[in-house]
Length: 246
View 1: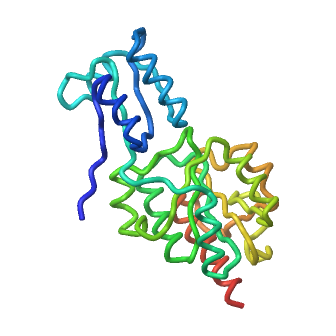
View 2 (view 1 turned 90 degrees about the horizontal axis):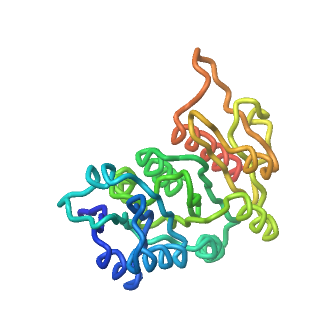
View 3 (view 1 turned 45 degrees about the vertical axis):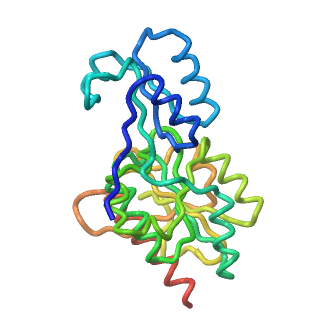
């Protein structure tokens, strides 16, 4: 099966896409555009929790496939997003304590796709990504997931730290990856758990890290100080798998 990343151009086309229920990741609007259709697009984007970016006309010209963008281009998700409740329900249906992977500051589609693939193989019940400063479910992510998106739900949330606080009330605790943490083999990572992974460069954000209950370090013996985000996710996810099998 082939997947296409939906790029929607033109004011009325974008409005109709919103009203049809299509899941939109981002809307790019030309700086200075102000009229009725633009106001409608802004209103629909806010209603559907969609990111709005204001950019120069030159940027839209570069993004456009046909040059008839009318000051508006939208990116729609190649896959539908799940709700956080869907992830918890999946764990309940399997009779397992929830195991969720949360990603902070991951903007590389290949990393996101690889993490979704790892999540599926490690038995995680879903993946949670933030609305801002993160890649969405683009066609590149779908391809990198190697089919795992058919089985592993991905939820997008406005505030990752608040989502974690809400999940704590439902019994989950959270561990994030950081080189200054406790060696992962010394942590008890059984039970309902959320594994938080940040980007290679920035790592997990300060507020998200503060919300975590523990910080896990992966032992490293080489000359560089960080792993690729998807590799780090895989190492920690399988330590959780190992502990759950004990």
